[in-house]
Image 1 (tube, one colour):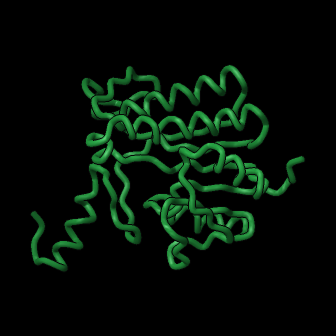
Image 2 (cartoon, rainbow, N blue to C red):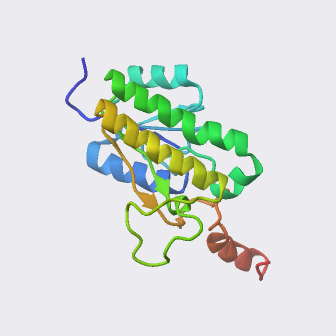
Length: 205
């Protein structure tokens, strides 16, 4: 039986969005109700979550166990392989960027969790899309591995909502950067790297 208290799991909690989002969710819901997760060891200076699980989100059995152990109600699924790295590892990118999302949708369908937040990207647009005032339902034409996986993820979210009433929510983010967390494989990494290299090397190439 689920408690009425919102209990949150964040995957990819040590990433650029995850670090800031985790800390904000702790402010709203309290540290004891927020579980951060990632592949790396817990870094207290980065995340204020009351709990941390070092886990691979493609390990469905482990993820399910974590959700049961903490009585999770809401998942912020941020873990993914970013655009630049996805081009180098397309098969793994498809596995990481899609399979865990599907498993979370299945868990919501089963009633194990109540709500999913999953970020999409403007990478879904691709070629031939207007540069300004883009409509929500414009035809999508992604040309990158990352964009293709995000477009597929959007359709899966829509499917689970339409067919099973799964509460899954998403917005299409543009390029994002963090003042705190180093970039890691995205196409906008240069926007952060230029400052680090300018300070350390005196130039950026």
